[in-house]
View (spheres, rainbow, N blue to C red):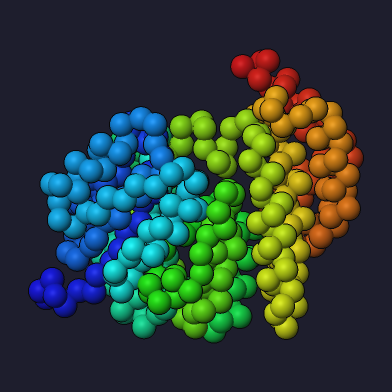
Length: 334
């Protein structure tokens, strides 16, 4: 099959002060077995050597486009990439992550073989390229029907980390370009991906690990709680309002579950990692989050969550120290 017979895939990579990891990311896309890819690097006002690296790649490889913009955050960079993308399909990668050589071929074949509107592979947290994961026998799940797809997405998000990420997916550009990412916020994937999936009638998921999500300790989803992490309330609120428009009661309930999990997740983050001083008074924040959590705890107890999470939810509703004290004692022993 010649390259002309493979539709163009546009891979959008926002770049901000990523000089340490950028080459690893871009090289993993250049190494793809899928033969027809354009790479769009959007330098989001970096203050390090990232712009020079982007421009060097664009000079060396005709398939790479380098764009520069004033700093506006990952969402604004992704939106610039969406406007520039020429591909029939669109994928996203974060500049400190990397992908397996056959990721986009795998996603494309999943779409073609299952006549799907979009596809998704699995993701793994990784500290470096020597990260080893156990290969599993491939299991492919095809979800048919818009409501079933939305239920799958919302339900999976309560069970597994990384489910909300668009980086593990491939979607047609005509769907992706209908929407834009909320700018100036984090957790923007949550509602964007929901909107994309609401346009799909057939979605296929593989358990094969093809995306490596780099964990440096400064990730959006791990480490000390920062001020930006409270954006999760906005994302969860938008998602809940979107689900409220559906006639399906299961979808509506799962939207409420995501919102109810927000104070619970932030409290767990504080208990495990602590809180940044820029967030404000620690006691006041914990008090407000605990009050919010108590109002929503019964939703979590009815939700499709593991028993261990429900026990944690009860403990935090009783008192924040029920979780924070045991953790501090464990760390002292270590």
